[in-house]
Amino acid sequence: MLDAALHLSRTRENEELRWTVAECLMADMRKHGARRAQTALGLASGLAESPAESLSRLAFHDHGIPQPVLQYSVIDQFGRVVAITDFAWPDFGVVGEVDGRVKYERLLRPGERVSDALVREKRRENDIQALGWVVFRWFPDELASPGVLCTRLRRLLDGGTQVRR
Image 1 (cartoon, rainbow, N blue to C red):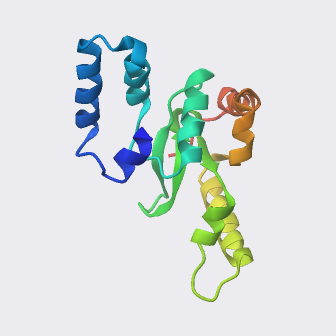
Image 2: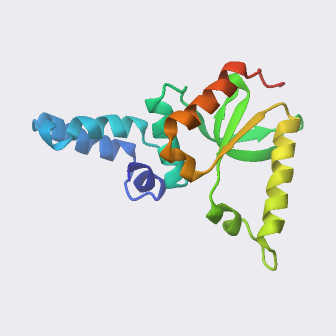
C-alpha cells in the first residue's frame, strides 16, 4: 500500500508517511504495528509500478538479496535508453523483470495482437543482453515460493559479471 500511495502521489512525499509513523511511535503504539510500519516505510518506493514489484522487493529483502535499483535505464554506447527495467543490480550486471499477463496487454498498440507485443519485448530483451546484461525474468505466481525465486536470483548475482561500459 505504501508503494502504491507514493506511486500514485496520494501523499505529498515519503516524509509525510514518515511523520505519521514517527507520531505513532512517540505515542507508544508499538502494539498496533508502528514498528512494522516503520520498517515497511524504509522499504517503500513510489517507483514500484505494480504489486508484483513491491512483493518482489520484500522477498529480496527477506532473503538477503542486495537492494536493487528500481526503474533502471539501460543505456547504449550512444547514450540512447534501450530499456527501463523493473530492477537492476548494476554491480552484478543483472537486470530483473517481473512479468504478468497485464503487462503485454498494456503494451499493445492500436491494431496489435498480444503476440506483437511479445515479439517487441523479446527484441527489447535481446538489446539489453547485447549490452552485456543478464536478464532475470519471473512471474507473479513465483512469489508464492520466494525462497526458490531468490535462490535462482542469488545464483545469477553470485556468478554475474560486470557490465561492459
